[in-house]
Amino acid sequence: MSVSLSLPAYRGSTVGVSALHVGNVSVPTSLRVQKPIPGHDTIEWALYSFLIENEKAGKKVLFDLGLMKAWKEKLPDILARAHKTNSTFEVLADASEILTSASVPLASIDSIIWSHHHHEHTGDPSLFPPTTSLVVGPGFKSNPSTYPGYPTNPDGQVSETAFQGRDLLELDFTTSSALKIGGLRALDWFDDGSLYLLEAPGHAPEHIMALARTSADRFVLLAGDAAEHAGVLRPSPLRPLPDTLFPGSPRTTPFYEPREYTIPDAAAGRATFAALQAFDASAHVFVVLAHEPLFRDSGALFPAANLARWEERHGQDAVHWRFLADFQKGA
Image 1 (cartoon, rainbow, N blue to C red):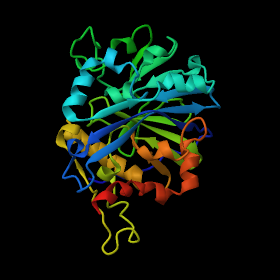
Image 2 (image 1 turned 60 degrees about the horizontal axis):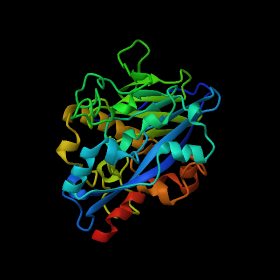
Image 3 (image 1 turned 30 degrees about the vertical axis):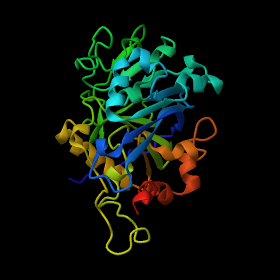
Image 4 (image 1 turned 90 degrees about the vertical axis):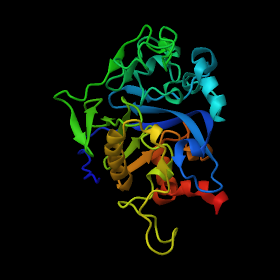
């Protein structure tokens, strides 16, 4: 399946995108991908919240929050699951703490947008004032796994404190204002062409991505968990591995295939993945996976840097293929 990518025209507005590093997770590679490369036994994830600022409109939103510090109290089942899978969690700070320490008033955050409901993305919206709305993907309110939340629903996968006392807005991609980008239905969030929310199910029913315009001809795509490791996404027929990195015939097949249970809706996941590879092949789009660890050690973090400028400084190709270092132990 291939996708033709036509990016939206520039309409005079842009946003800044910054990464807030809230924590880290270590996961056995075999739990997330099929046939791990020898020596690549553990996937090291970073946990982020992404601050998106539209200065022209005077608006700020957060895309995901990472994992909350109070997860042991508010989502106790996660602790049991972590022990069963030999995964480890480290929470450095809530996103709200990082913003406050940088003198960003929490009341200035208009909305929190969840890519999906998994615990390492939802954080703790209850730490924000009630004027901050919570935005979720389609089907969230009708899914018993997500609404109502825990503990009203003992099997709920999100804390009900996230919704209490604030607007819970469920996106509708069937409205007349919806458009398509890369084959995915999209909504123009600020109505000025600076931020698009894309319907991207597969990993979760309500999974969404965010396409942020950072300059007249450049975008950052916050891809959520549409791919959980860059080796699942890269290389591809649209962007083969360079001969300088892999001498001989160009490699066009991703290093990994995801475990089937990481994409419960396989058909939807294939459509999302095809679109993601099209974005990833574009010279105008910087694809940012939700748990990309390289930002945490490279001066890419809020408040010192934003992601678009960081990528420009380090070079598109160098950033794109840096995940190959994960495989050095198996070399």
